[in-house]
Length: 256
Length: 252
Image 1 (cartoon, each protein chain N blue to C red):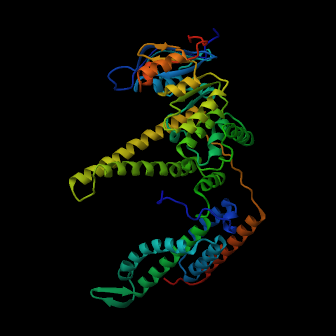
Image 2 (cartoon, chains in turn brown, blue):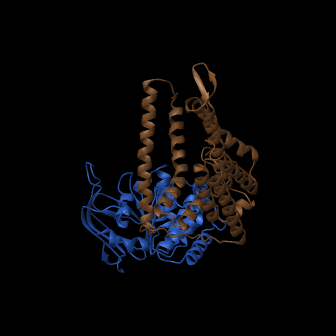
Image 3 (cartoon, rainbow over the protein chains, first blue to last red):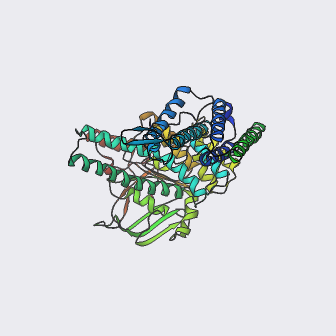
């Protein structure tokens, strides 16, 4: 069950107690704004805001750093390529490759943006259990099919992971060790196919069980959300901050 | 005998691509007082029969009459499913909501109950099954036995008129099995139990129905006889036995 745990969803911090709907709206606006922002000031502002939210969520620092490290390991590859391929004024050369000033700026901007968005999402979205996330999206009037897709994917991910582990164990118990040969490829292909077939079968049975309990294509939710004063304060504060970032972005000259 | 609730009248059913049919000219009845065990070897059509009754499968010939009405189309089966509860063999198929409370409330909500009423019914059902405090548990993190009991709660929460249980004891430990026996003994509705466990059936049903290709053989056997037979032939399978109290009426 390790791969799909939700380490940040439990807690009693302010960010955990906020109404998920407000957090989702703010996080969506924030991510969009930062993704399209071009000025360093706006991106730095976004990063500051995200870190502020992270303080509200008060999550275990080590784990947050671990997640950030994972994200930045992807960005590392960007640094290997982008500075040398972006056209602009040459800054230094490594063998046949020339790094440009603009390329370095651009890589730095992307790094800051990605970290700002990830920190923001960790603080606002990862603090909502996936189940609640689905229900909040539903109450935000997202198409029900998308919400159900999210909830069902989440619910059955564990079942399929278990099934996969069971099949893998069964293979292992019969002496299977992955190698680079035809036998291994075939075995893994069988494993994947079997998982697919079983998943389809299970989907069929789950649907049948739902039919037997009177399902007619519509989900009714038990959950009601309560919007409180702190949610209003959070939403207003965040929107103001986002507006300030937008203003910065709009008024200041582009750097790249 | 009173009007039967479920009548399966000379149906024929074969799975697509199967060499031979599961049922041919098969008939079966369930009366309003019946507590029936359904037995037969693997592949004899026990689960198939339950799925035919629920309309998850359709017979190629013959009629199915439930609560006095013939059911043929998907639309006919909608009210049937509101009133007959089916407990699936695998609890992971049955429990699909993230939390126990939502899963148990799913049926009542589909029946048109308000969220508040559905929640109340769900909590009451959980309490009745000794599952108080489970409402916020996450369904996939329950143990096997808990999953089975919660599945039963999801079905009972719909207040069905008839209950169909498909191998309710498979994979359960003795303690959970006893809990299940107590729950079933408290039920005041007719039910059908598919099971391979003689002990479990003898605590829960009046008669046993042995499935054949074209008919269902109802054999009430006195308790003493079972134990007697059991002594003579250890480890006998469930397939050749039938039990029931001596004072029970033969079905159909």
